[in-house]
Length: 214
Image (cartoon, rainbow, N blue to C red; front, side, top):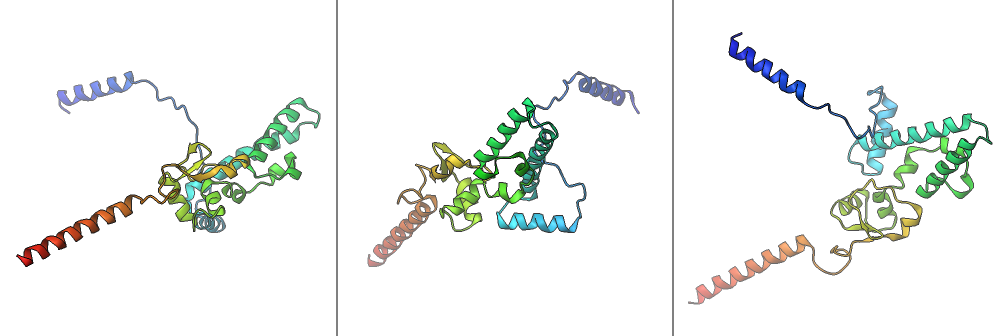
């Protein structure tokens, strides 16, 4: 190649070497399946996506990844002796966390029940599912749209994430946002636009009638 091209390539490589290393300050939130074409797994994921109106299968993988980490922590603690300080401290903390999320019942305060947790138990605790259970929406899809459009709040916090995990103490605090058109009789954006369009049409019709009378 000509000398100019060699100089450009060497200059580009020097710039690349001077760039800082790309350290990531976050970790993976899901893992892709090892067997992507397994029939039973594909049908089960499609069932979850349809039942809970999920955006894609990645939301299922995220719950599976979180559940795998929780089960791994429970297995490591169950290997230890019952009077081990680490098992007593971390095991109680893990069980209390599952209790706060509402995936364990009061009579299931043991690490053995943590290993029996399933994906639907976590999907039932999503904000979109809780909005549907409180009959604030007619379907999972409507609940998802309401959350995206910032109509729902949990306590004083406005939440626009359908996958938000609702704790037991926050179930009764799921309401419409203060500025939401669903919380009052105020017309929303679509109704305002339609009313504005009808007003213009009525005004135009009056102008046409006045012109005809003249």
